[in-house]
Length: 166
Image 1: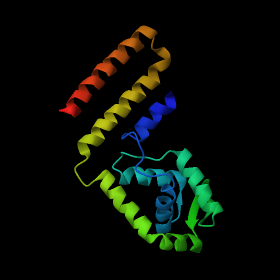
Image 2: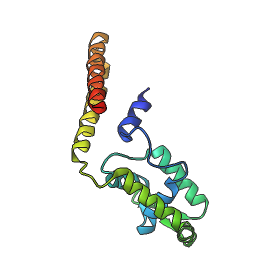
Image 3: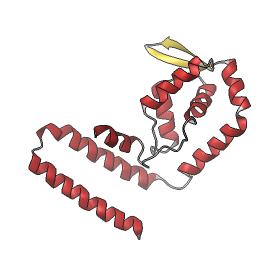
């Protein structure tokens, strides 16, 4: 149950903007620009999506492993972090897939749009704060308080749904 809620706050739209297998192109394109480590890739994607998407480590690290096994990147320990660098084979792979990667970049731009996202970011930050507040105090909340909290959230969810359907 916790994983579902944790995912909701990492991917507030409730889904990833990528199809299965797309993340390898995005990650490889980021590493093409300069060597990077896993959490840096997650952070960059979160920034580029205006905070609306951050791939989980469970998606990024297996993808990095795949890219390394395919010979598209190499890994080297630097300051206690595994830093990934693109290989000539990786550059060639990106070049060969240029039409696809350009389409994927366009899709990402359309997915997150260029409209003002400040209000949405602030709203999602509030939701995240609420989740963290409840999570921090969960062990000390009795069943009656938890039921009251759930009722408040349920009412708010219904009101938000009504607003969205207007």
